[in-house]
Structure formats: structure tokens, C-alpha cells
Image (cartoon, rainbow, N blue to C red; front, side):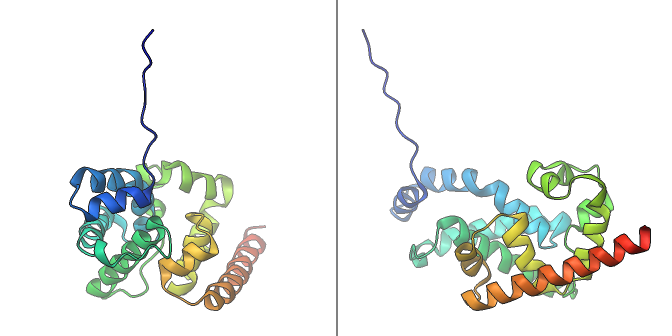
Length: 193
């Protein structure tokens, strides 16, 4: 009787350690593991059709800065912070600080992005158009915290790491952004009966 042994998948910490030691396959596994959430982050923060470029640049920067990763936060939230920064850089380079969240999904609701399960679950049903329109009206920082906490389902600690804000700022901005979003949705509901 032969026993087949399967290796348990390595966690992010082990992969980071191996990648720091020069193991490119370990870094490739990290890229494969986090590409979907990095892509969603870029799209939801307004990178639109440039999302693939943004995440590619973020993965390159993450690899170059791997020695600076301290492990205070999860690798995922550290990476998503880089994606968020790259998306902000994109907005600055475009000269459009008030870029639109979900621009791609709103422009073409049948696109692959809109069909993504995570986005689809949040934006399901009749309220999709109202929610997208309300999100567009929020200031950039309010959109960022809403995207991190509710669209990407990041914990408060992961949101702190991803946005680089103090915990109190994340808490207060989340509360204010949700109140603004509710107000905008309520006005939309009243307008459309």
C-alpha cells in the first residue's frame, strides 16, 4: 500500500520569506493568489480599463519593496495599499482626481467586471444603478473607504493598512461615508418612487 503525501499549501508569510530569499516561484504563487482581489481593488477605486496596468505595476513594486514588508499587516492588505496608491497615481497622471468608482461597470453592465461574483453580489438587483450613481457622487476618500470595507470586505485593520490612515479616521470616515451614501440612495428612491 502506497501513501500519497500532499504538501499543505504555504501561507503568505512562508511565501514572502521564500520570495525574499530569491524564490521567484514563491512570488508567482503570491501573485496568483492575490491577482483577483488586486484587480477588483483597482477597478473599484476607478482605474477602469487601466486596471491591469495598475496591478502589474503594483506587483512589480511589491516585489522590489518586499524587503520593506514588515509583516505588521497581512501581505494582502500591504499589497492592496500599493494597488490603491498606484490607482491614485493613475488618477493624478490623468488629471482627474475625482475619477469614478465602477466606471467600467456602469458604462457596460454586461462586462466581465460587472459579472465578477464579488462585485455582482454587492451590486445585485434593481439598486445597482442607484448605488453606482450614489457612489459617483461621494468624495474620493469616502469612496475609498466604502470600497475597502464593503466591496473588498477588508477588516478595519486591513483598511487601515490599505489606505494608510489612522484607525480613528477609518472609523469616522466609514460612518460618515455610509451616512452620505444612505442619504443619496434615499433621495434617489424618493425621486423614482
